[in-house]
Amino acid sequence: MRVAIVGGGGGVGASAAFNLLVGGGAHDVVLVDARREMAISHALDLEQVVELAPGGSIRDGDPGDVAAADVVVLAGGAPLKVNTTRLAYLEDNAAIVRENLTWLPDGWPGVLLMVTNPVDALVTWTHRHTGIDRRRVLGYTLNDSLRMRTAIGQQLGIEPGRVEAWVLGEHGDATVPLWDRVRIDGAPAALDPEVRAAAAEWMGSWYRRHVALDSGRSSTWTSGLGIARMIAALERGGDELWPASVVLEGEYGLSDVAVGVPVRLGPGGVREIVAWDLGAEAAAGLARAAEVVAGIADDLDAQPSPA
Image (tube, rainbow, N blue to C red; front, side, top):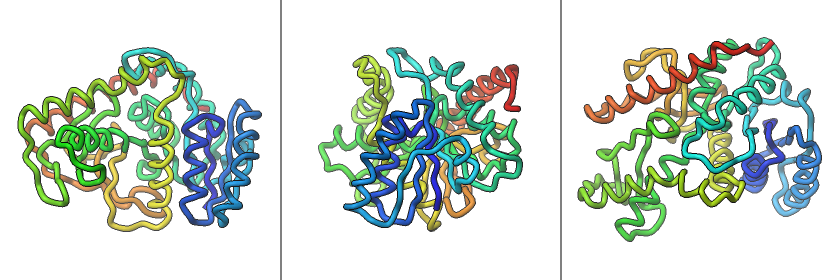
């Protein structure tokens, strides 16, 4: 499988490449970045990773390599800055995504994995303006669910990996944590109100606490590993569930908007959008998230589309 990582000179893109190479599988990874020297630097370094984990390949590339990829990861974005919401990057990142999409020819048959924020609005806008089937345009939102699992585990004092928890909705302020689907060691778990409140506060403040450090980096390691795992699922298929932002056409009572929902992946993109029975609180939250995302995407519609 050929994977082109646009923004491959950045931390998230390089981390995704590293995890693809060490995770097994014959991945031909191409790093594409406006800062060509950064893509070359990472490729030179990762060539020695392949010596320790043979099977794949790594090189730097250019926009022409994007059109030949089976999976394109859009991870480029404006420089990180101290702010309070991912919407701070909307205008700059939308311009970057617009340019990136011009590199895909009509009828391109691959899968597009959007990592650039605000991811849900950009997935919605991309589907509207490219004609790519909605099941082949995915938004990466796994980190929200991972942070929920971390928050609950810390509050309960249990080891990582024992909590199963899911966040749907928007990858931003309109997230929808599914508190009634929390499981510990595979068994349903009802959280005390104090635990739930503390976990919710930890999750809700994570982004602001992180960017306030002014470190200039995003969730490099988590996103890189999550992206690689999702690409592996796209390659092999299976019954594993993933949260991902996908344009809905009637699922959950929503249409023409992308929000995070549970999906099963396989060659060609989303094999199945899984319909969970949501409680009244979660269903209302998902509807609010869709309204937020649709409004942002509508604003983008007023701007020029890719040539």
